[in-house]
Image (tube, rainbow, N blue to C red; front, side, top):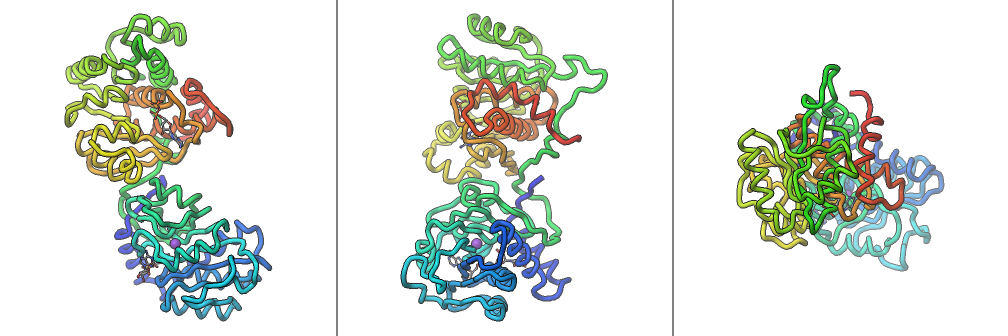
Length: 474
Ligand SMILES: NC(=O)C1=CN([C@@H]2O[C@H](COP(=O)(O)OP(=O)(O)OC[C@H]3O[C@@H](n4cnc5c(N)ncnc54)[C@H](O)[C@@H]3O)[C@@H](O)[C@H]2O)[C@@H](O)CC1
Ligand SMILES: Nc1ncnc2c1ncn2[C@@H]1O[C@H](COP(=O)(O)OP(=O)(O)O)[C@@H](O)[C@H]1O
Ligand SMILES: [K+]
């Protein structure tokens, strides 16, 4: 599990550890990890050109100490100080190692403007870390403008983003990769900040941390959570998933929901809906049967004008038999308040905007806030689709999905996702695990079929089996 802790949790854990360690020990652990990551990325250190952007706090201290370590390994290191006050120990270390220091207010001159007179090969963003307020001050903005186009390594977080919410009001740093310390923060997993962080490299500090508010499943977690058939399984013990999706106007949504549900994770799939769509479903998936008892319902995609009635039927059956329900697409607009059955709602940003009476742009700017808000308001698990899909519970616990590919942003991909999650609900996972495991598998299956190129939604359900086969042993 990749875990993300809040600034408050990190500070408390750091304080407890620092009390037991010599002064400066934690910063040196951080600086060594940072210097090594920069060296690994450059491929060598001797004669390489590293520019440090140094703010007034310990984040700048990390950058200065790492710069000193790189300078001792032969790199040309120059620090642009963005404040009159910077970390004194780090500054002394960089000077002692032969690094160049440009005081605050004098980074003028030609583009790049380094003392070497050449373009730096990498910029180390030590402007602010977990102590920073969102946004960048003018000195930092000017410095960044002068090195535009040079790859940036962010220290702890890309400066300017909101660390605990993953929000990223302009301006902020956009990093090629981020070296963080002790634990991940929400900004590493949650968009739009996660996009600005690039690839994230974690340096262990040995912190003792409480339960995280945001986490991200890894392959081993998915393998542990995945429902597998017992030796004496039969199709009913594995769970039956019922799909109420598609209509004469939108038959494809029914076919694609079934394609997800028929990924093999449940014992059986039932399709209930328009007769002509049902015929096409059976042609494409001969194993699918008609109405009967199920362990979970998938409802909504492509139900068009029938959405309200279809949702009502599924909810009535779910209430009677205490079943979980996945609600997607058209049916989302007919929810009026908290659900009285276990449920997963799977809106994209536009659908969530309509559900919460917000602008889509607001949802995209603050996805963590609104996923949690919707989960509270509807009293169930809400999965907000996007590059890093978020799954939130009413108490705020959230998982971010980091599998997937932008090629998955294609019509019908959401229908397949609903079906896959429905199969996991029928197989017995609770709504939070079903939604987060289903989303992880869906993203991984898309990456598998994409192989770096385009895909169509119908391919994704069939690839879940290969993803499951490639999981590590539980
Ligand atoms: N606390 C610890 O034990 C450790 C901390 N470490 C580093 O220390 C960092 C936190 O250091 P600090 O608490 O000193 O805080 P930061 O260095 O993150 O930033 C705080 C300073 O930046 C200024 N500032 C705030 N917002 C700004 C903005 N938008 N633009 C420009 N300046 C701004 C503040 O006035 C303050 O002086 C971590 O992110 C990490 O890099 C690491 O060395 C590991 C150990
Ligand atoms: N940029 C992206 N990178 C990765 N996955 C994405 C991206 N944009 C969207 N997705 C995923 O693609 C799927 C699109 O679903 P959705 O918007 O519901 O489409 P549809 O309604 O056509 O089925 C979701 O699983 C979503 O998480
Ligand atoms: K930073």
